[in-house]
Length: 360
Image (cartoon, rainbow, N blue to C red; front, side, top):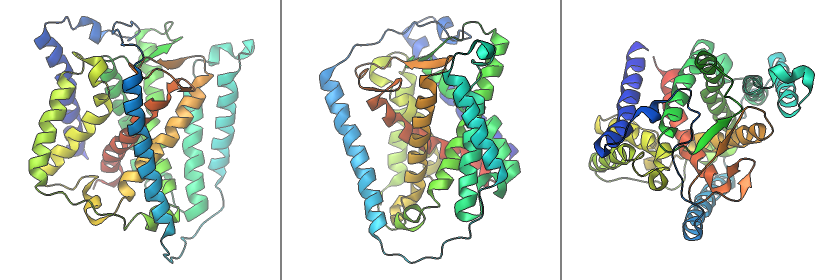
């Protein structure tokens, strides 16, 4: 576990240095990018562009068409299997349901007697969500991440805080999202408030992925789809590593053009390094037609993304978006095409979370 922690921190430190290096080479002052708390909006964004919106819409539709086709194909497979033993919905799942209900009411109402608490609704909502999803896993299969390895599951919370702080850092260079009604927090208060909220990201996504895998289409149907063999993987990995690292270094120099790399580059860098060192990656099962490890976490992050955006929409302290070229057709606060970012984010959650939950 110690070696894993060191390797993850080393990789994060290396990735964090790339955007700063790019700005330094350009000759820009770095002070504003290191502001804390990060409340100043200093990155100008391009306006709406119909051609770019249409192009990305094709990517959006094509991606979800392929996902729907894969799931539909998996459902058609006539595989007979014995359903795992299920159990009653656990008592702590009902606690999670009550906690989420309380958090939702607290988040979306403005009663004066609850005014001082309405900045802090994110944590109870998502702790409740995590308990509910794990309870549903117990109900369906008799098992869940929380009870299978409670010690390792607990480690996901501090790891998640570090994990999302890294994305908060990358966002400083593109400023695609920003927070409102947090100006009253002191630096120390902001750290505590944000870290507690960020600690729920990995447990939520991985628990949702575990729940999806309890359904037949994920347990069996997606195990034997179209294989995707890759010839000369190390050569490809070297090229992808150079391109993704270069893109991450330039993300602050060309924020409007390269902002999608905030979500894609960390995954590509990690997978490239794993391939170059001869290790299995999250994409390795695709060579034998097994799509479960890719689709389950990607869709899990999208499901969590729906609830992140839903509960954020009516909250007092919340985030808003400023995404170049596609800032339209919002679902809650998020522009429609922005939901594409949740798919690679789910894979990054799986890569980091799997190392923690399944490391020896």
